[in-house]
Length: 359
Ligand code: UD1
Ligand code: UDP
Image (tube, rainbow, N blue to C red):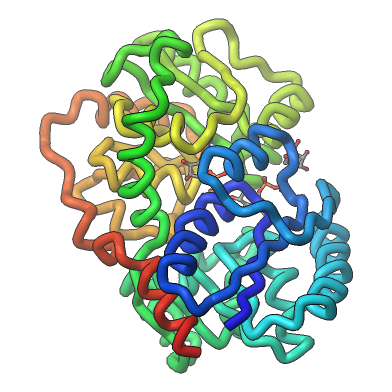
């Protein structure tokens, strides 16, 4: 079985790292990687390949940043050539980025079966670029690898029942596996001047938040208010760095800004945070995995199980609601639910490898 994996953005490198390990362990599968170049800064790309020992891509397309249409179109054109050269039995895709959609279109046009990891997630908001990418990719996939029962039900509601497999969440596998590695290998606390359980970890990159100056300004002001009570660390996504500068905003002096972090550092910092404030899909879930209370700056989530017992609270991008919810999470005394039951017990990648190997 020859698998061609298409990745391009930060969370896809992380997912491909853990599934790639499972494919090699299973045997009988030859995997080749394509990096579209959607993310290209060292801290958004190379650092993951090195730290997580991801094999060097066989093809680096170097597409870079441009409009959605241009980016997806350029990837599609280049992927066509790659498929010509590789002739894979299957194209393996992750999540919901433009790299995912380009991979799906390129493959289906050539009648190459598509395997989609994280199939069935929905926000039900087609204005969100990721939602369009998910719906279209799922529609043309032969293997729909769902992380949760909710994802299976979402597909059923769209009439997709064939090739649907509830395998669990590969990000859970990854967090379990790499948290142990992180413990042994990295200690970001001294470098960043943080004390365990005495800081809030913040991330923000969602287009709906960064591209709307009034939402972005609310988020900046909320981070500043929180930082007056407890240290706040914000590893800054390049999109948000540019948006804040472009809108003439400033994080002020109390919010601690740093470059995007490596995955192992990020896992360590999530695990030891007093609370997490984010608009990231992956980060809100990792907080849940580690039993760290979370506040999510969106009005909906694809990961509805994280909302159990207010382990994760949705606040949209309202300054007062964000601040109040973070303070409430910092003051909470009630225990958080056990995440382990929801995500397939750390065997999602192995299940995917087995199904792909069996064709
Ligand atoms: C993309 C995905 C999003 C995912 C996120 C993970 C789409 C539509 N969105 O969003 O689903 O959650 O990745 O982080 O695919 N930039 C740099 N250096 C980089 C990468 C990006 O400076 O290495 C800047 C560029 O100005 C670029 C902007 O960030 O225009 C946004 O990058 P892009 O990949 O288009 O979208 P993300 O917001 O990263
Ligand atoms: N992440 C990281 N360094 C950072 C921020 C995030 O390694 O500075 C990891 C995070 O732990 C998670 C993944 O990147 O595993 C989430 O990616 P992101 O928030 O960019 O995208 P999303 O999950 O929202 O698609």
